[in-house]
Length: 215
Figure 1: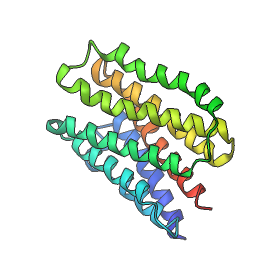
Figure 2: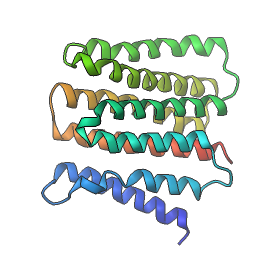
Figure 3: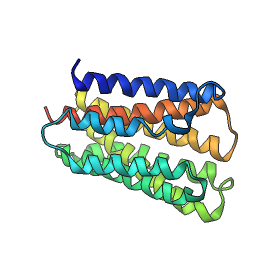
Figure 4: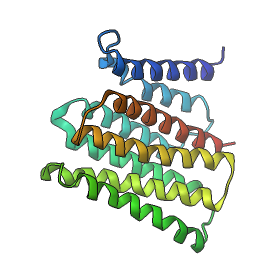
């Protein structure tokens, strides 16, 4: 079996176990499972292309560091910084591979971007501690920007590859909103499962976009 197929199979097996670990923590420990998807995704990318996109690789590394730090409560702020940097590099990757985007498309996509950027301000400002709010907004800004760019790229050129990018942007948005609700309002197991599913799916969708642009 080709290495890519093995890694792809492993990614979704870990994906499935990670989600089940939220539902059945007494049966499946997420202590180490939660760290495995990104190293596997990184290897999958390396075996999928002949020439590495170092902006994308940097995004994967920063996101992985964010995951490690996020699971250490003392480094929550640092985790948000690395998460934000990772999304920033996703934006760079998207812009570098996109075609010239018309002004009309920019105007159409600006509205959802502004709405998305204001959502956390309205919903979370009273629930979040002041000392971490700026870090959250740093991360949320780049999530909103990525959603903006992914929408823009797809509006300008509708094809299968750009649809993967749009899916990644939309899932990033959903994941961020429901994760924020879980952290600062009410913890619900089903929402936590949703966070795991959307988080891992959106990064896989971005992988598909990146390798799609290499073909």
